[in-house]
Amino acid sequence: MAEAFRSGFIAIVGKPNVGKSTLLNAFVGRPLSIVAAKPQTTRHRILGIVTTPAAQLIFVDTPGFHRPKHLLGRHLVRTVTSTLMDVDLVLMVFDATSGIRQEDERLVEQVALAGHPALAVINKVDVVPKPRLLPLIECCAALHPFLEYVPVSARTGEQVERLRDVIIRQLPSSERWFEPEQVTDRPTEFLAAEYIREQVIRATQQEIPHAVAVVERIEESQSDARVE
Image 1 (tube, rainbow, N blue to C red):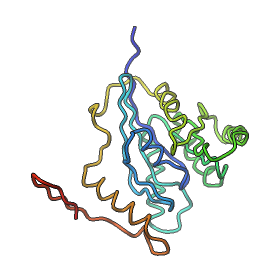
Image 2 (cartoon, rainbow, N blue to C red; image 1 turned 30 degrees about the vertical axis):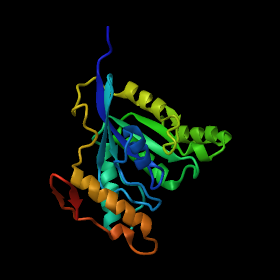
Image 3 (cartoon, rainbow, N blue to C red; image 1 turned 45 degrees about the vertical axis):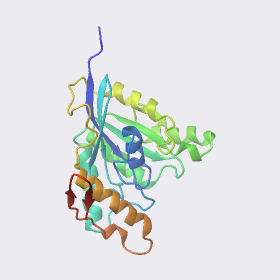
């Protein structure tokens, strides 16, 4: 007897710059969520949809969880905590290069309050010595009873496929939420605006890159399409 189709929503959460957006892009196989070295690049909840013959995985990228110092920061943190309440599974992403920090501990408390199954994802393993991973996994286990602990490199793709298989096993039996060819819930205009904002954030230094916003208008003709 064939296994039932599985489908569900998976929150990708973590402190700033742990590689959440890079992980989302690795799952989907294309750049959906913008990536930059500066923290708090991600402002919006973005869905990345992966459909296989056995399952549909709906990833929810979120802003970095931190101690907010201004109105935008408080809004971003609320986005994270509200997302935790509306999913079937949580991917708690830790940075292997920095270890467990106070932001991680505070976010794990929110994950526990949400009460959903959670996986610990140890990212950036391509740039740390392997002997450092076991103590880090033990620290994660001391924080919360995660279902599994999966070391990955979102940048190189190492272990990402294995993580996908682990996720599928934890999803509920359900029909698809989206058509198989759909990879995100966002329109082309939004993605184009985000790609432009990514380049601005990467190019600016001491300016105020997070104040930038892109107001888009796409004009299409038979020969070309232009973003303004």
